[in-house]
Image (cartoon, rainbow, N blue to C red; front, side):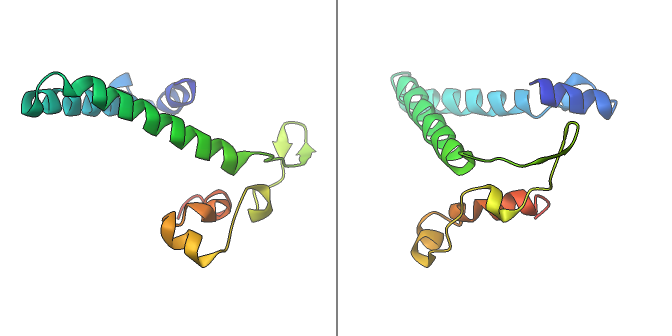
Length: 113
């Protein structure tokens, strides 16, 4: 949230331009819609599967960034991110099964893609 708050301040935007509350509102709307469509007992299952999804996502995120180190080239400045700075796998089957998730290093080297 601190990074988002700094981005908003830097761009002179009010708090409601943040995407974070929108994500929570969409999740709440989905839970309410699920409860309306299938009954309130579905909400705990929705919350449980959401927790599992977050844990899986963060686990993969940790694995992809484990050992990510760059040399400090000046005080507080680090060398540019290159593909060797994060986990990557060129295996074709992994490419198809994981929806190109294993090509994570490219995301760091070319964040605008």
